[in-house]
Length: 302
Image (cartoon, rainbow, N blue to C red; front, side):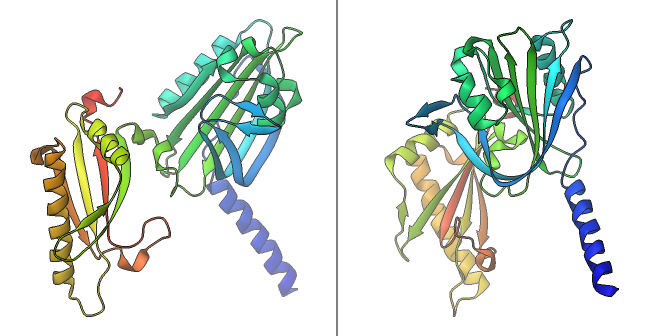
């Protein structure tokens, strides 16, 4: 009796956790009928943020992600008395109400081949139509619990002149690699991870392209360049000594940034020292500087 009961409780908890992981769904467009509603739970769901193309049976896109997501997709047929333009406006307004961010949009042939979107990306043959009659938009927002949500909207007019929309609502389960998708990331550029070595003089492991990128970011009017300095605590090192070492490295970087044309008054130093020594990850380990540029509010929309 106990084992079956435990299994039932585990199943109930799994359902509750899954429900908690998804935001309140967007409303169905009023002049549409839902043809299908598909649950999506995938560790490597395909999300495109650029036009798609197919080369030798392989999907190609300049910006494509494989994300761990939970959510659902809905196929909707739009009433003859309405239009895809109204549908797109309806969901744009919904995103604005949730303080969403537009990640990517395209229309017509600029999106790529409709056949690829329909059959290779969304796996919905109903979405196949003429390339010039398609559109796609990707949005992000944070729900009331602060979880990152993605909304993907693909629209098509089929050869029979019927309009269809595919709407995906996805809760991102692991944000560690996709911070740039956050709705507030429009103002946040980076981070750039700069490893360093040395004890008296310091060598920074970054190339000319990275430096040029940073200088370009810092050129935004009113931008703040944040430098977060991390060190790994030595076996016989005190916290105070580690903080002093971290500060020296950061000061060296600040002087270097001045030579690159980024004035010291534009820079903001955060000396984290050994604070993250115990929680290193494969992506951000060791002695390093993390540099982030935050745009001024007035220029964030650019």
